[in-house]
Length: 386
Image (cartoon, rainbow, N blue to C red; front, side):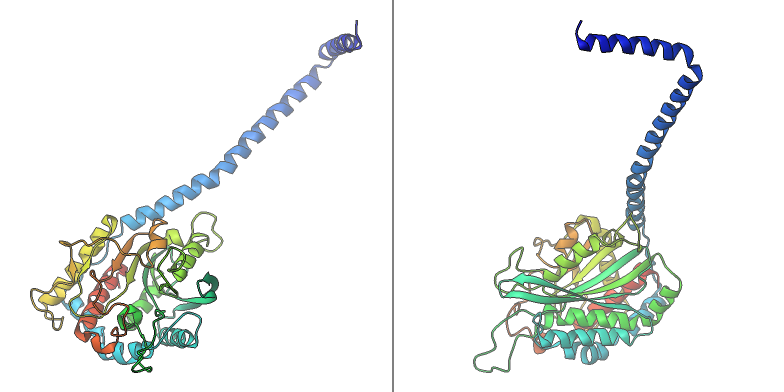
């Protein structure tokens, strides 16, 4: 018999003695094995629980977003909110300082960012303000971009986002008049001024909303780097929105949470661009936000019926459901690709002065800008229940 055979026989005999003479030890071993098995099962359960909890919490945010019911204001309330929009303040205080070159990483960009921060910082609502700076590669080399962010109540579980871009495209000056440069009035100084006026006009109500600790708050975003430095590509465009969407997707919300992120907290992104020209045609681009587009249509109709829109004949309608000219690449794309619902408020077709030196103050239609701001004031106030 081989050495291996002898070892097997010896083990067989010893095991026989142990099993016959040590009953309590056998029971103890069985108990230990049982306890070990229970511990393994419990560990597996606990390790699976956060994932299940995360999915459940995220599902609750989606459920609450989809079930959100805005207010519907009376005639008196609509008149009150419309009257709070001040066209002179919009134009002279908010817009004029923005009508300069605002190329990312330049002194002009820094100047208009300080203007935005100053206007919001002067309000009583108490916005939490942030300059979100980052460096990115461009066809012109490394460039520092800075998004401007304002949140009414950072602790609120959900957010309505109003957004635009604050940068201007690089275009050569007029060779016959070098002082005539591209200021991008509609693209996108006026949208920035409209958002500033909305925050100012609704200041008292927003301050009250913050005190109430509402489940839904308002966030304002002024993106940098929407424009391409050369030709529009996936990498040469949307610098600020790409950065912010990624950042929000990995930022826990509420702070310290392992369940949800800031991006999941976004109810709706309302993006303004190329606004300011006369007779804009704005269409709905996404089926999942059709009910919110309907609210804009209704707000325009109610304001018109009450005579609260100027230079707005009965046949005029900015927001239309009977046209569709296809989607537009803009700052909403990085958010849309991550599942954020979007209202894209941009005229299609684009204004005739798009990306030319004619996109200047003298080509803007002031009554239309004020009308659109009043419509958005009703939309925001009813969404947030101000």
